[in-house]
Image 1 (cartoon, rainbow, N blue to C red):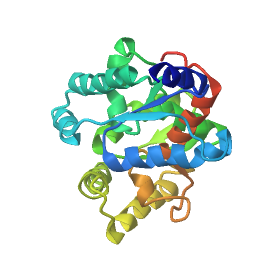
Image 2: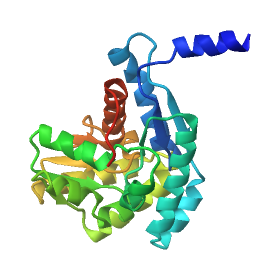
Image 3: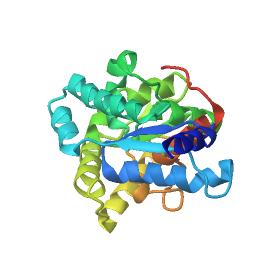
Image 4: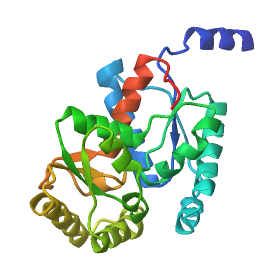
Length: 250
């Protein structure tokens, strides 16, 4: 019986690559996972999506590291997930969390698997759509950092950050409301107001939803600027990569 099971497993091995998801916060990781599963059939056939594995340590561990600006410790958490996903048979990795991508350069050389970089995916999409001046929303850790400015500037796209006060309130909404799955109309209105100011006062022609929870409340339907949905863009890039073949290391 075991030989028959092994033989059947070998015959049934998919040619589509196995996606490993390095999770951080639940809502963003879940939306990324659901997007891959929901949109897989359009690319791969009815009821089909790539094999997916996810590992997520307690969010508190990441927050503690971020609060003390210990990016080496953030990288260590990401690497721990990478190693577990490699052991599960994943072929490449994605991380549906923009903020902790700040630590990715610290672990890329040690990673057992290659990664798709969320900001590169978003920046490529912005360039393909012809945007030249893009606003950035997200946690204070992300907006204060260089994850997006670096990738956008490399493609000739200006990255505009909200004001210091706006960054603080956006970050509070994300961490205290969106991450736990709470949606308040006042918070939606605040995001909309910041995006409108980025358009009218800063001359932005698009906005990055640079936290994977932001698409829960902001989309093209209620934003005054076209949105670059980092969660779904990453999921779609992973889906295309899984169907296309091996990924080169970062």
